[in-house]
Length: 230
Ligand code: IPE
Ligand code: IPE
Ligand code: MG
Image 1 (cartoon, rainbow, N blue to C red):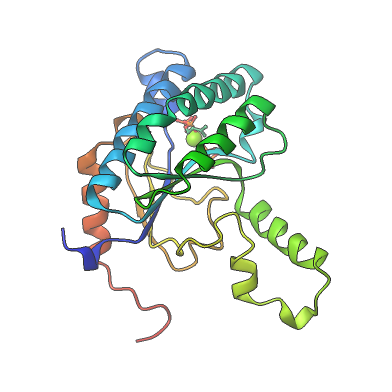
Image 2: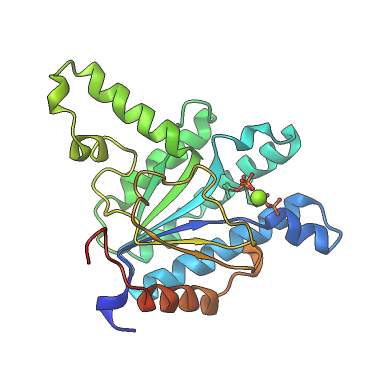
């Protein structure tokens, strides 16, 4: 694929794990385990394609509403995956976590920080994992940060808000993919995806393959982006 038609930043809502498990009469947790494998595969493919940045929605600020058992299982899965960090290091990935870490366990927070530190000097694909992330929370957090600086109101600009979001320094989202058949954004990168191209797909996340990513990118490449112009 030509570089010119590749999105710089891809956002992916990893949805459909529960339904994948239900179809197989398995516990929802089995869907999350399989979903984590799909994440790994998809990230590798982004690296192979030379994608600059990919953000995966792993846990929303609303997902705490789920049964405690399921939330705990998801947190455990994060923890196990972060232990495998070395692999990402080898692939020259820059690892970043976005979202409010406050309610996460100390051990998970420590693992996140370690991985960010260890991959900081890399210059390959940036992999952002959105954990306890909400688009509204992201904007609120940025505005509070700016307000706390006590500057002039006229100093608050679109750029100053952008650079205080969790995604600070990353390009806006070009392509936003949501598998699982749902057609909504569910509080994902609402500011950053203002002019993203949306691709909704019927595949459930654990079944999401390299081919699915290729086909979403092909759809993106065929779109005519105007950004309000002609
Ligand atoms: C996405 O899959 C994973 C998280 C939100 C943590 P779901 O668990 O939402 O799967 P469905 O939508 O119930 O199938
Ligand atoms: C969005 O999926 C959040 C993640 C994939 C992490 P949800 O399953 O939580 O979204 P809704 O509830 O269907 O909107
Ligand atoms: Mg869901």
